[in-house]
Length: 192
Image (tube, rainbow, N blue to C red; front, side, top):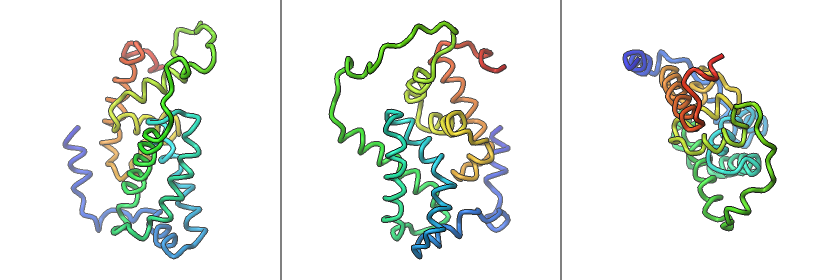
């Protein structure tokens, strides 16, 4: 598997296809609303996936919008437009961290907002899955959220993050194994 990753990542930059979003970054620098809108449309699910792995789901949408406002104000500081996806996701991680630092502390009793109906299916509910996802290492949690929550496929994740397709596959495979373990599911459950 590492040979595949190595081959994909060793291709010269000139032989790689120019990212579709690169002209939008330049346009956003020139304050073109259409370019900003295209960047938002292309990257919003990615940013949301990163944020939802760190903060309560109810706050993720507002924070996603905050990230794009921050991006617009900080865009002049971006030195290399090719680094835009990694730079944007770092803004998202920092915004989530600031949100968690600044929010008032709540007791564990306050965290249980509503009584839950008994689970009769034998499968964990979405809230349990999200909480388990938030305990995984960042790389796996973010990639899984992009796939499971935002519905992005492997090539889309690779294109938007700058990861190689092989790295995305490895992150999804290892992350899913860790998630199943955290949820108490056997490795074959959920493969159907």
